[in-house]
Every structure is written in structure tokens, then in C-alpha cells.
Amino acid sequence: MSTAAVVVTVLTALWVGFSALSVFIRAKWVVEPLAEYGVPRAAWPWLGTAKALGAAGLLAGLVVPPIGVAAGIGLVVYFTGAVVTVLRARSYGHVPFPLLYLTPVVVAMVLTAA
Image 1 (tube, one colour):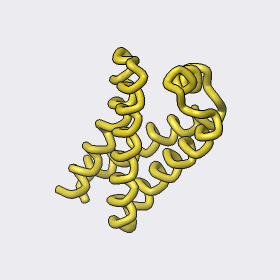
Image 2 (tube, one colour; image 1 turned 45 degrees about the vertical axis):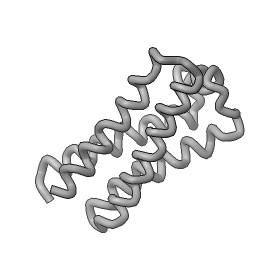
Image 3 (tube, one colour; image 1 turned 30 degrees about the vertical axis):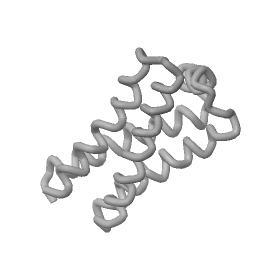
């Protein structure tokens, strides 16, 4: 695995982990949009858990590659769902936010596969 793949994967895991933490601590700039999009409050801890597990899986994938692949696929599905949720809520100006998380996950997966 290249140095670039390791660096991008670690930074991506930290970025996604930060996103998970933001949900867990109910950061206003995260939970207010979730409420506006119609995401039930009861789902928020599950969303944070999914992101946290995905971040941990990316890191574990540096040692056990199939775990990283599974985590990457899960995060791609997660953040694609986030884009769909934002679009369904007609909050078009917010579409870039989940893309800021989706893009590095895809890049990390491509670099790891190369």
C-alpha cells in the first residue's frame, strides 16, 4: 500500500470520525439540518454509530484490507443516502456537505485498490 493511500485513509477516517462525534455531541450545525431534512431524532445515534464504525473500519482496513473495503462501501452508501436525503428535503444548497465526506472516502478506496 502506498504512502498516499495510508495518509488519505487516515485523514479520511479522522474526518468521518469528526462527523460522527458531531452527531454524538449534537453539534447545532449538524443536528439542526438533520431536523430540517426530516430525519427522526431517534435515528441520530444510529447515524453517528454508522459513521464511527465506518471510520474505525477504514483504519482497520490498513491492517486487514477486506475490512477497509467493507467500511468504504458502507460509507459510500451512507453518504450517498445523505445526498439523497438532502435532495428530497429540497435543501439544494446543502448538497456539498455530504459530498465533502463522500469524496475522500472514494479517493481513499481508489488509492488503496491501486
